[in-house]
Structures are given as structure tokens and as C-alpha cells.
Image (cartoon, rainbow, N blue to C red):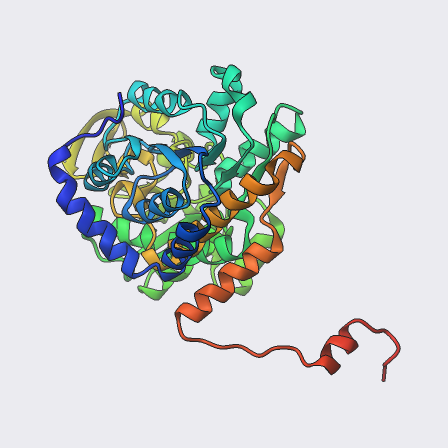
Length: 417
């Protein structure tokens, strides 16, 4: 089967969405022009497990322009934009993705991608890498290297590397400065609020808004919620990050305390069990639960169901749970990524930098992958800085350069007071 999508009739709509994204992703379109000339990925098969969005389509088309054959599946059952999947299927991409997959369908799609025996993997959450290391071990010998897009995936891959289980090198795109300082902070911040608003259509101003985790994603969410008038509380386990949140002007307290007064709760930690039935039973009637971490493990949905007498879909992406104590809690997007489950994910402009890193790292792996150690690597500094420079140029912004005197001073130690 060359591809499997929900509706081929959505192709025209998908092409329009991709065109809109391309206009707002000039760095990636400039890389595509270079790739069309140099063909750095000629004859290479790339297996990708990414959110199938209009922005991802711009990346896929860039890699295709570089000569690659692409097999793509979605990295979350709710994040696929079906019109984009339809458009990609008509351009020679082997795409296996549709919104609303069951768990079995999700892993079926992963296996379809693995069967193309990719030389390079692009992952968002490390599910494809995990599959190749467990059920499809025979295919690993083909793999030169891979990339990982998100914090949750990097956590998994570092655990694999530490336990000596990782069998090919991975470049942690998530750890590039031009990724996490912008994608995680500005992208997650804006798109999470967007998802909550689309799902609920409620006012954020005046509400007590609880953010679980003050990493770069949590910072972005907290900042934007405050900007919309919310009274923001942060819960943390790291004393340094908690102190940062305090210094940034947020209230900080344990999640069990925040549970008693919060109106909206959003998790963004990359870890399991941030909100459990213990906290749910403390929440007031009408509280809203959402997750912005990659996996649906941060809000314990099974425990929510265990303390409920009924649930009902009251709006698209909003499930009303009636608890045994009589209170009602509202879960958004099944506890999956609310920014992609209930909205369209990050804005084009921020994904431009993340996916520019993906494209250039794929080129780097094609050239250098065989010489890299089997561990998780940072994005090469020259790629990170190149992406930043290209982004500035696309905005028409120029910056200063060091003078010869300044370069000399920075390399010396003699000059003092």
C-alpha cells in the first residue's frame, strides 16, 4: 500500500494550507532551493514519524527536493491534518496518517514506515526509533542516523543511550538553541492557549491558570496566560526552575495546593502522573484539564475515569466527567497535546526554524552519519547559527560583526584593569 489517508478529496484544501505555510517559512523554502541544486539526499530513504501538519509538509517537500524518498506517519493519533495528508499522498510521499486513529492503527502506520527500511529517521517522540529497536531490529542495519524533534523523545533516547541500547546516532534537534528557545517557548505558549480557546471558547482573563512544569514550554504557556489576564500558578519539582518562576512574578506551590484553587490546568513536563486522582478530587466543580506534553501520560485519564460516574462529549475536544463527589471536570483533547489535538499546532514562523534544523541535520547525517558515535548528539553549532542567521535575513534584520581588535581581545588574557 503506497499510502493510507482518510479522504483523497481533501487534496485541494491541503495544497492551499501548505502554500500558506510556505509563504511564512522562507528559511525552509531557501534551503529547498539549495537542495534542488545539490541533491544532498539523493537515493536516500527517510522514515519520518512527525505531526502531519502544513508546516511538516513544507519540511517533507524540502527533503524530497533534496532527492529523498519519504515515508511518513503521524506522531500522535489526534494531530494529523487530513487535508495535508491527502495533498502529500499525491506528491509521491508514502503517507500513513489520519486524525482519530486507534492505538492499533497508530502502530500499524509506524510499521508501514519502518518497512521502507529507512536510512535516516526523523522522529517526534521516539516511537519510530523504539519500534526499530524492538519489533523491527532487522531493519536497523540500514539506518545511518536519525533526528529527534521533542523533549519527550530526547528523554527516551538518552535513556536508551545510557543503557547502551541505542544502535545508531541521533541528533537532538530539540536541544538546538534555534529550536527550544523559540519553538518550545513561543510556539508551545501560543499554540497551547490557542487550543484551549478553540476547545472551550471561554475567557482566560481572571481565571486561576495552573501550569505544571516551568521548562521552556511551561514558561511560554505561563507568560501568555498571564498576558491574557490569568492569575498564573506554577508547580515544579526543580528548585532552580521554581525560583525562576518566582522571580518571573508567578506564584509557585505544590500541585496539590494549586488543585484546590485552579480553574484551568495545563501540564508541560514530559513526565508521567503530573495530575492524578489525588489532585482531581481536590479540584472545584468545572475545572478544565489539558496537557501540552508530547504523550498523554501527564494527566492520569484512567484515574479520572475511575473516580467518575459518567463522561460525555459536550463540545469537540471537550469531555465532561462527572465525579463520584458530584463535581464535573472537563478534559481537553483526550489528555493528548491540546495545541495539536484542538488547534493547528505551532505557528509557521516558529516551525520554520525547527524544521530548518531537521532538514540541515538530515543533510549532515547523510554526509557524516557513518562516523558518528551511537549516542544522542547536539545539533552542530554551525547549523544552529546558520538557521538563526537565515531567520534574521528573512526578517530583513542585520547584526554587527566583531572587529579584528575584538577578536584578538577575546583570544587573549593579558589585558586587564
